[in-house]
Image (tube, rainbow, N blue to C red; front, side, top):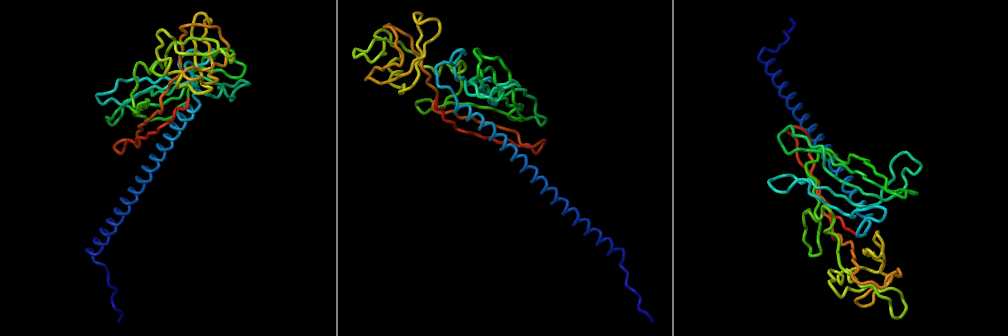
Length: 312
């Protein structure tokens, strides 16, 4: 007689099914956690990449900054401006604007497109929109060419060539390091660039040895003239402004240092009380960018900062 095959009882089947469901739920939870971790890692990598691009673009533009008191003719305006678009304090995220005169690629589809030119570039945080989760507003950081000159251009070409640099940006902050080693926030004087200009008055005389034209601090109301002459390196630019020199400022270079006076590269007539202006840019710029990483309840903020030397 053949033995009867043992069958699973209902209880055993239910226990087996329960164990299987528990294992499936555990595997699903682990898989979901791994997927979320990969997604968060990807978003953070994207944020790091965006930040590197932004800070790299700013560093390149600052490295090519034209170190002059004003943008060279035929442009007008100061070469570096830092403006606080939103007032600081009360927990408001920083919304600064950075505008500088630098080397640009000629935009458009003309024959000179892609060639190197010079022009004003602006970085600004715009297009703010509410955060769905109730956090601070987020926007888009733009790099915009405002005007430029390319090969053969005799006058600035007005433009509004815009490139989206980074999205989901909460704050864009620009601080500058002064000669005393203190980081300062934007002010009215940095918004129009006057904070980065030294002003004084010079007397222009002929060198007694026939070497050319000398400049010295004016005997009357010299202002910052002595500091300007001391701090301007050989080959550095001075901007001379006087009605007798014509309507446009005269740009001269320091050819040689003669004690407290300097020898200029241009021959000029003797004059007294000539206004002189020199670019006195910050030692460093500290640019800080805060981005939103993730969506919904998983959203986090990532802060990136870079210190950039101003060589102009």
